[in-house]
Length: 396
Length: 80
Picture 1 (cartoon, rainbow over the protein chains, first blue to last red):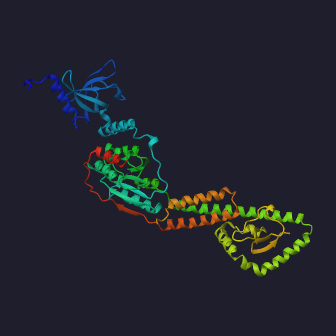
Picture 2: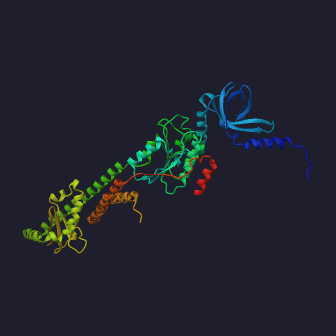
Picture 3: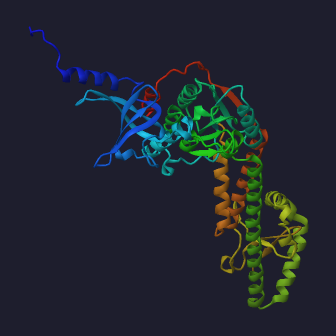
């Protein structure tokens, strides 16, 4: 058994310090007061008292947390920090980590303190902003189930991107509970599978109305969210901490919906343009093929010892075509006309109408297009498609 | 079998259009690409035309606000 004895000073002071430092209230405090007994230590720390009419609190501000203005006696300030005990003197001490002139106001000071702290921690780092998916299918939405923001977003998405499914995770967006609810709503949403992105939104209001979006819990819930987050809070001019953490900041709820999703009208135009470009490419190929046919014919005429006979032969074949070809080429023609009908706005038949033709080798199944004189030899039977039909020809 | 998504069809269309525009394909192959592309164009436009926005509300207690920041982080970590 140990002999009962009085406690040492160290033990008591150390216990007191532990009690204070483990207390949430005392470890995250905002205090306003007047600076007095201001001194600066050799290494650059600032010591002073914060006081009002009836009390004073010893305060230290370490040199890493210097304010952007000159501290001096009589200055009224607002400060953030924690309370501890300075053991050597057994004194209560306020360890400030952020000091601003009282005139900036409590909310502005809080905003700036959180912004600086989260910025330093890397929550706003542009390098970690995630790109938004091009065609989001499942869009999470955190907002009030009764607010204008929901209606605005619903309207924009119904018009621009109705392919989406919106998963509304409801939260109060105003009042004391709002910050906790918005963070909780994000947490619920984070559990949904296959979410492509989330929108956090609230319509316009006063700085106080929007305050939930300047809360550290909301900031961290956005930062840790498994999919990209788009913020749309307040009006153009309001920038909240949530906006800074979000992967994309939109000025309003409607704008958030617009930035989050593509526009089907635009997509439809792009699809139709692609259609026309493809048709155009096919038309160019047809023109090229027609050019090849011409050159084959020229070479045939030059190399043939009896061009007149060739002409006569072709004339004969043309007459043959008039009786039998329609039937024999029905399949190919139907196919060709299909393509032609599709690209009619670009007048694809114009190439053939100008006198060009497509020459294909006879064969079972595929009929290879003749795009080189080397591909034919005397005796080959060729199908020649022109503007209003097709006929057979033989290479001599 | 799941319906092909808009995204998959759109990617297929872009792929065919790219191949077609690069040229240097035989005419038969180009005609085939164009026919397939045209079919995709039709499918995509039908999807756009028929689409209707769905809005679902997650069930959850809206009063569930008193949770700690640690829980948010723990929830994300356990997902990973």
